[in-house]
Length: 322
Ligand SMILES: Nc1ncnc2c1ncn2[C@@H]1O[C@H](COP(=O)(O)OP(=O)(O)OP(=O)(O)O)[C@@H](O)[C@H]1O
Image (cartoon, rainbow, N blue to C red; front, side, top):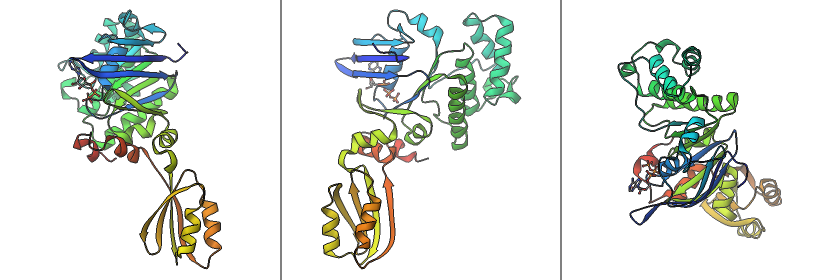
């Protein structure tokens, strides 16, 4: 296997004859933020459980920090911080005491644990709520405490299952910022699962699109666009008057152009496999036309998501357009 900090090869998990994860191969580099993006039931949590050694794969191999999670789950647990989507704390205990309790479970000496806990609580923005009982924390505060909780054992990798679930937009921004900051400052590798495409797009170096247990595509947004849209990765929008048949025909004949959509008598979208805005502008200017707008529209994860998850997604995903 190559040197990724998370290495997954041909991983399959079958429940009741149905594959929850189906031949997944993935390599995540040290220091990366990787987003596992997929609708409910795609197999994200099952993949995470296998990485943590909590569920045995039906077949395939996986290593985290060079360790086989299936054979040595406790070794993996020492080096990986896991934030589940339904995190729970001892409600009657303060944020600080919850962290100290986790530290004791991980065998961290008391003095060191206190030092780390105070520092982490400040870092995640809970400096004012250190002694407050977690039963009185908001969902966003609990999520921040969850991050502090996974960081107290100084893991090399953190795995976050839907880290922004149930948090308001401002809280989401703060949590994402915090994850990015931790990744940059401490060089921690982050694997996060989400079905919130806009959030994932904001902080992830790479994204994997996961549907029905299969990885449909992976890469940064740019390369995903290329993989998923092939010949139509770019749309160049043109508003010009008049758009003569001759001009339209000449545009259509350009090698890079795959299709032209007519939006009105003076407005078109030209679907291209690469950005040829200058070439199109030059060609149009050869005609006697009044060009009022020429601009490039890129596909974002939004379009990718709709293309792949349309009809397979629950409605709440489409509602989340932050
Ligand atoms: N213990 C289990 N027994 C049987 N089927 C299971 C079990 N755990 C998961 N599954 C099935 O495996 C599939 C993948 O579920 P999984 O929870 O991994 O998806 P997910 O992408 O994490 O979705 P969500 O966002 O809803 O948590 C689903 O069809 C689910 O019903």
